[in-house]
Image 1 (cartoon, rainbow, N blue to C red):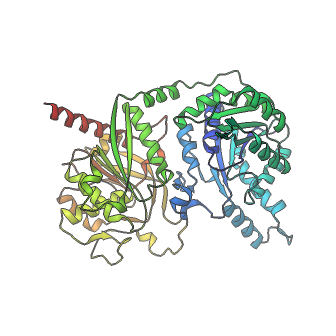
Image 2: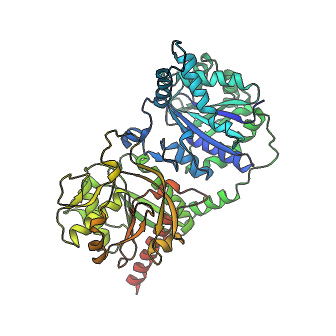
Image 3: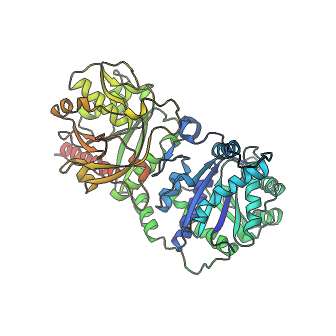
Length: 544
């Protein structure tokens, strides 16, 4: 009998129903009952990883401690569970085929014809079981990307069918997430799309054990009975997932619907312990009942798609709850900022965050936003490219180096205050070649960033090719921009700040990747706290 139990989450009818949130919510409930739980995502695209994808294509690229460039759903997994993910938690079709082809080239298949079944499906099954075989988890939840019936996901569905048979009774179950649409003309919910989706799944040899039905309206017991009858599941295994005001409500809603109870029954696992969600509910209470409100401008160049900055937006929710503040994030496209309208664009902002990104598009707008924050004493946080823009702005405006730039934007700039990292200069491939994953950073005692973290040694995740050029360090420091965080091995500047400013920090790393509900990131907490303090100070001054 298998020691680890497996739960597979498939989707039907349409994409973007929230398989990742349902998987993370169930994992949270199981974790709160004492089960060691993790989640993995199987992505059916042929890219080896999302690292080379434009954020408009797939939302943000999430980076793990071990340097994996992964799907943004892994961010949800970490934020909900407060458990670190790794390379093993995200598998793509590209990585599967790459591995099988490499094995074929080495002659590992002994002259056999390499086929989707069994070679590709065997590789998928191996990847699914890596986490389970580690001995670290009681339950592994595997989310299968895409929609049942897609050509791309067929090998994954077949691999799951085989694995369920191999695991045996009570060791693996399938949760199928579908849509129950409301037709306003008819004034009723329609079950037919779900019936067709379940039928498609059954044609692949897989029976859904639990149905989770996304809906905008309450699903009646009659409709649940109908779905149970036509989709061959028990009525208590038809779970309603109605639209929520926040994704953090979903674990509570799934508990009320009994999703964790039904899953444990089907896996023949004890379910006597009720989930302990006290701290989760406290977070929700603070999030939903703020005492103050601040408005922070997010200056980026992918702002049309909210998922491009998913981790940043969620980090503000965590930090807002700690400070009992509603953080209203106003997205501002850096390409649309100009000298003539910057006052209008920045009007009403209590804080400014300049976001990460790549390439020269929208760069001048980011630089203008940095200058506006610096000259108007508005609390500022720059992340990765945002930190680099802060260095460029300071070099241009304060040092008088009018042509200061990054060699990413202008290869032959006469003042490359941001330069390509030495180890990057010989690299020609784009995928997986940046400085990635967790790196140590030493913080200068007495600095603002040291005060924010409350310690001198930290580890943060990176995703960049270009760096602060140390040749300009002394001149920038003499003018008032201090380097206060360093990589202890390479001397790479990780943090800059302006001590004369109320709150001005730029970081080369990505703090948003490590913020969770249980452990909000200190930089975001400190930033929101500073924004609130500055706003209250200005309000008091105007009333005096």
